Length: 449
Image: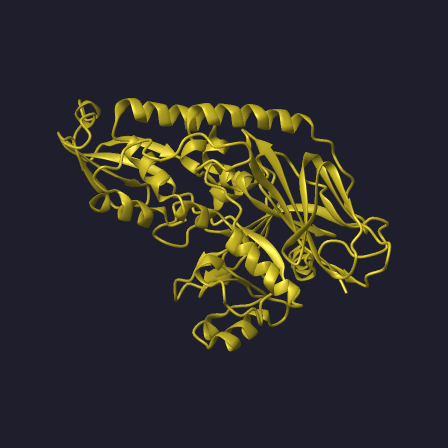
């Protein structure tokens, strides 16, 4: 996530900690990210999430010898000046977070070949090389260097050769992009959430320049790390609307989550002079930090006491890979933890997206009730009297969509529905937390012909 550009564009005079408008939300009306980050809301969210986790009941493995693998897409390490994380750090945090596979989205830096990055099992975690490039997430089978500048149809044809995969990325920037040659698209993107919350990012950065505000931010990140990072998470309607339009038009498209992690949301503050500091992130050069003067923030005079120009005065890490991986992931239903098997699961749409930090969804299922028809990603003939059923590991609010329109909803661990005709059906699950619904699971569709 290129947070530095957001901060350097937005650190304006007058921006102060907590400067987010609005009062508390009404029941089931979403709070703003700024409201969610207030201590009282973080405490409530933490407490209610702990209660949700206690209701979790394991579900059986998927049918047909499949396993539910937690995977990360759109992950960056050692690939640009604005990426602070490393591959060994990513591996360690993947193991800590229970992630089984990481699909890398390395930035293209010619002449570096992104396909020469980690590939295969590393200490039990499977890595698949790939790139975020030209508006796509691509995972070819072989080097793409000769084709990287080719026209889009030729470029995608080269990506797909031999079993490669391409997904539309950052849908908010290209909602009308054609889907020919693509296996699917991002249906959630963490970076998009951050871009929509510039006020919150500015507020957090400016919190570093006040002694009391800094201590409060550090304490909240220590006590509520998942809740802080997830405060920006919203239902990405532009992404979901694009997905629904395309699948309703007859395209089979797999939806994945874009974790878009760089481990670069580390706010830092350095001393410039006896009345001035520089604020930015850990990937910013010292000369690029945004200067903030004591005339704007008098607490700076206290923060610089006993320090010398260039000294690091504060650092607050919001997005270590471990926390980012817990925030959002893509679960793939595959027969084994191999690159070939996971690629096949993606082609078949055997996947669902989840915000795992609230509750482990492993075992979630959606398909025909008697098992004789299709499940997630599958297609089959509609039959009168057939039923679709979704099952979750914890009680939640379940909504069933047909072609993007809600046709059923209910509360509990299961939602059963008898469709009146063919269509493209998918499930969304959410929790009611602190008086609002927070998204938890997005299934891939069942296609009834």
